[in-house]
Length: 388
Image 1 (cartoon, rainbow, N blue to C red):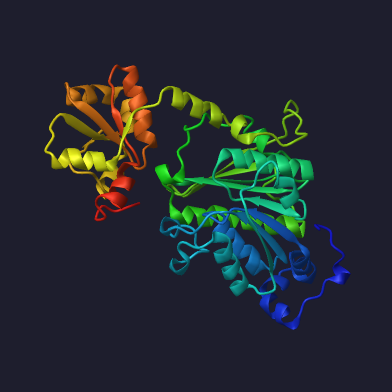
Image 2: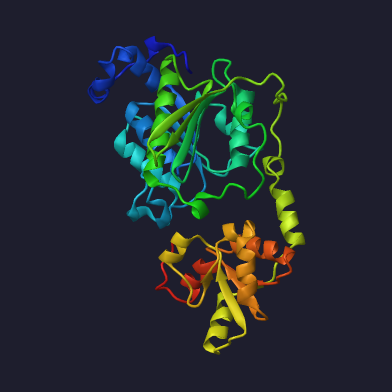
């Protein structure tokens, strides 16, 4: 309800005190705080972006917040997902977030949707809310959220992060552009590594998530100069902001229904291609047995990045990063190492090493992938090897 009947909204004495620093702002005032109390926001995800934006939306006095997630808290989340803590590792992210939000602001209603948002449920979940905030980390869900917002006529506050860089914008607001105007086509599957593979600076999530929270508050208050029509680009490494102007594309296909977004992003096709070029696997227990037998007829290569190798490595593994294999420079290195020996490749969890082996196969080098990578080695063979 972006235009609520403010005469029906009342603040309690406790709320006047809680929101006093807002109310004395001329740009917010009592009317603005009532708008925040009457507003409802749906947040997709309680991860790196969802954490700071949920905290600030609750603290700002947004009256109703809906959260969509189906994951549990993992210790690797805590470096950036500040709404969760060590005491709730292994528990539901939804319950963890709700507990923290209600501790910050007991006046905030929190709705939980313990499910993955899909084409089947997106319209039903998002319809009751005034604003949708996209805190997701994958392309199928971003396109799904965008299209659902277009169909429902909801503003879509967008953010994304990777390594040291982040983006933010407001889509589908006041006749402005939507996500498809900026990104009409998704990148090929696997081209953009996940944060688990590529890493992300923890505080970057705080910057972009806070920008999303700011834009959400501005949309609720009806303020001008939102990020609608602008894509904000942030680089934390050199501490710079850039801005790109974005306009609706008149040739963009009409969005009239929700589709199969996995298919749209090419994920099933990529999986089929991988199955057609499936590489043989071996388990970490089989590798351990080779080592214990003193076998010398194999070569183990590690295709992770050098900084990952410094964190943890399997004894005897030779580092040849996937990037070197893909650009061709590492293929000769592998040939020299193999020299009649069996080739075994590993990475963190098995994805990158499988990709490397497919590339090597094109060059006539056959190999075996270590199932589960060094993560499985740490969990099943040598717990002293750090997980990351």
